[in-house]
Amino acid sequence: MGIWLTNLRIVMFLLISLIYFTSTPSNNSGVQIFIGIAALVFIANHVCQFYFDPGKWRLAAINVDGVLSFLFAFVFPGTTLYLILVGVTAITLFIVEARKKILGVHVFVFFLLWSFALFFAYIHTSQILFFENVANFSFVVFGAVVGNLIHRLFAASETVRKQYKQLNESHTELSQAHQQLTQYSQQLEQLTLIRERNRIAREIHDTVGHKMTALLVQLELAKELMNRDEKKSKEIVGVCDNLVRSALEEIRFSVKTLENDTTESISFIQSVRIMLEDFHHSTDMQSILELEGDPAIIPTSLQLTISRVIQETLTNAKRHGAATMSTIHLGCFPEKITLNITDNGIGINEIKPGFGLRNMKERMKEHDGTLRFESIEGKGFYTYIEFALTKKQWIIGGDV
Image (tube, rainbow, N blue to C red):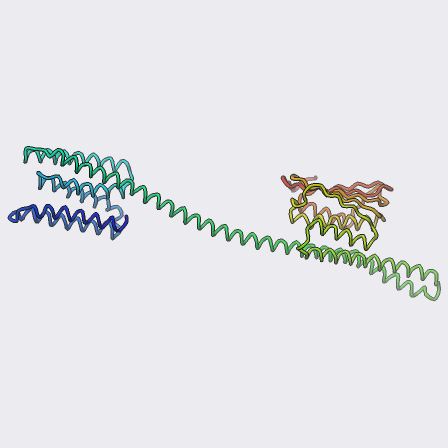
């Protein structure tokens, strides 16, 4: 309750008490003492209710105010000012109390005491001040209505305060969650890049390292045959030259791929085109890139995987299939991403997955993708990949 309203309340109590006190004859000291005690009780109750925390005693204090107010009706049976005191008490009651059962009991007690007061006044004065009672009774009703409205206003204000507090807490939690999500996203991106660099490092070790080992063996053999068999020695040197060129192409292609990973200013399709152009310059292999749909729907987490799949497929097509031409069809649909890659290599009837194909299968498992190979000798190699965007499923255990 506002401080101005609480101060107005005690002013009303003291003002009515003062009116009764000044209208009492000076020789009637007993009545004056009653008024003084009533005023002190009003003040004490007021202080206890609004300057301390009365807890469960607040309703009892309000009842004391109400009883004192009705006592004025029996001490001064010819007046109706006591209803003003009752009206002020009614305002307090309806502000602090919301239980309908308790309010109903107080309303019943009010009419009971008012009936006794009217009967007592009629006995002592032989009259009932009808209009004065109706006017002051209307103030009691007005006080009850105003008290109830103030109670609802305070309740609504408290609800808004709690909701605002909850909204602030939710906003704070959402901000923290957003920051954590941003950090997790950055960490995931860094881990993805680190894992990809490690994979490329292993691939360089497995492919280029193997070629370097073979190169050393061939060079040792060339040294031994240099003086004994010049023709054979030249053939071995030619093999060494091919091994060096092949290893150099793979190193350049892998390094160029790493450079594209760290370039954030180019789009995904542009990075794929650059990769295909670099591969063409390194191997003279021509590629056709076909795009269907909007590539913007491709999740960032899939972009790197798609790039690596294209890279590994073309590398295998050139290295093992001696392909000179490839077609890459990228389909971007709301429910899935598809990738079809064909080449004009020599093909093979029986596919034996090597390092590259096994690596692609591992990538598919990470994203719940579908991977399918087809090849016929003399008709090249076909790779089909599909990533579901709307539904994902992982099967753990069993034979699939």
